Length: 399
Image (cartoon, rainbow, N blue to C red; front, side, top):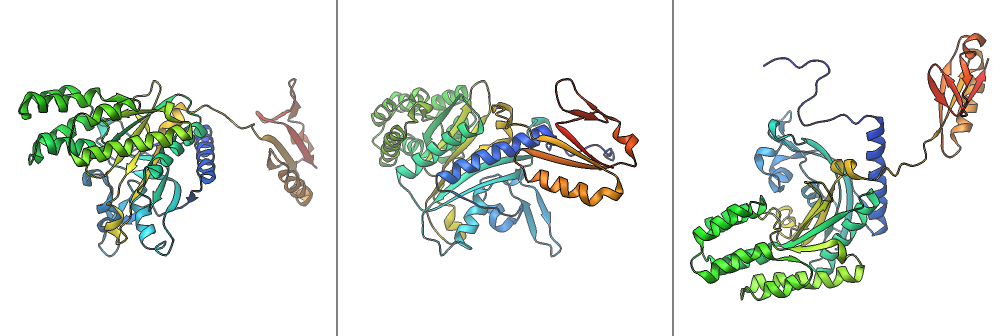
């Protein structure tokens, strides 16, 4: 294996140059401010966690975790999401807090992907977790907040696809009772959007025209609240029917929020079916093939940390959003350069300190060796000044 060159970095990670870093921080600040207005308090957790706790509880498959050993031989992981770390905190440091608890975060997360996949191994997420409320109102709240957060980030055209894992679980138990392996194959086809493969599997495993018709009809169940009524005609299963009634109740709440035009019910949407326990959703921006946000209900996770509680939440894919968000750049800071000879350092730094107290100003200081260096400053026709090829709104010289 060849030694990496000094300028190389590992596959799947990136450098954020000043413009991208400024945009990342701008999106972060706007989204977190939006979440705070909805009553969510920011939390920060460590990048390193124990594998046996947070790593094992994570929704990320084991082969996608970055693992390392500490000095005592214990296996650690780089966090692959923020949901499991927050569950750990809610069950321990916040165990005396009255539920529900509303928390927000912005963090980098790490996942190991195949090099040829072209996916990022380190990326940023901004999201929320609402712990302790199992109601349709709680699920609708996180979706309405996801919509508000996307808008705050500068994403203008998007759609939220909303599903419920309970509907598919109930329908599969009704049509393929006791056939867990075949059920999993069908779920995996839906999860990977392999609808051709799904139809082929249905024809192979479903006995009888009625069962095949019910399973194939899932692919047509996309639309508004009329989809709920159509879905209820397909099944008598209690779990599936309760799931649809939950979605119907959510839709009513989303209409009250005034955001239902952004939402599409899609009963092929099942998310990570081994992790989510209820509603699940993904947000897609116009002309972008990857989801820019995702979330859902995960009522079993907190029990793994000793504090059983229902929970729901979402994460924005902040790194992807940078490609889509309106620049929405704040006004650039007016750059002021303070030049000084060593004997005037105190006066120059006092001037710089006073100037930095003004809004919208960035101040740079530079030592010069004499008045001749100050002559390298020149006024620009459009306003401002130039010194050594750099532009400034104003230059103050002490010599």
